Image (cartoon, rainbow, N blue to C red; front, side, top):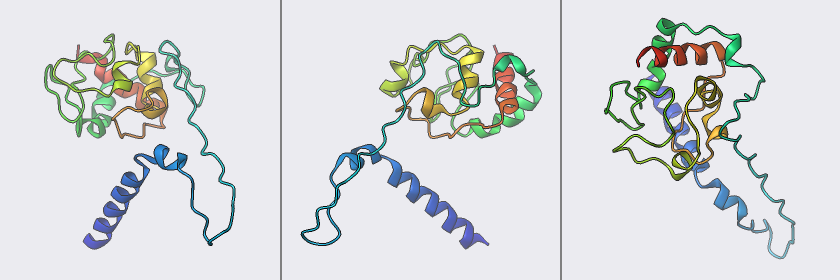
Length: 168
């Protein structure tokens, strides 16, 4: 059982490493499989542009207003986030502290090195923007360092936001 878990973890890391920098690789021409064969290479699809900083539309069309967040459940769901984020003021981990995140401009915690994408996003973290972001972070801030794929469950997103709002 331990070997299977290790193999799965190693495979996941390898896939993650392969996906980094794929934009650069996609732009490079692909060599033909056989010498002298001229096979046209299709251009890699480009990612959709990020929604505007004030746009809060989700991929599924659901709105935060349709959900009532439960801070106690959100605290439980936040365990996923706690690997990289603290809720204590001034305590940065792999990610910045999320204490008082609601209402804060993106990329402004002193002492944390943000990606240019996050720092230059123009986003203010309203509950609605967090709801959109937590659905698929890389969609909202392409180029973010955050590797989290998102919470597909809108209720879970609403609960985490209610928890974060309860902290200050």
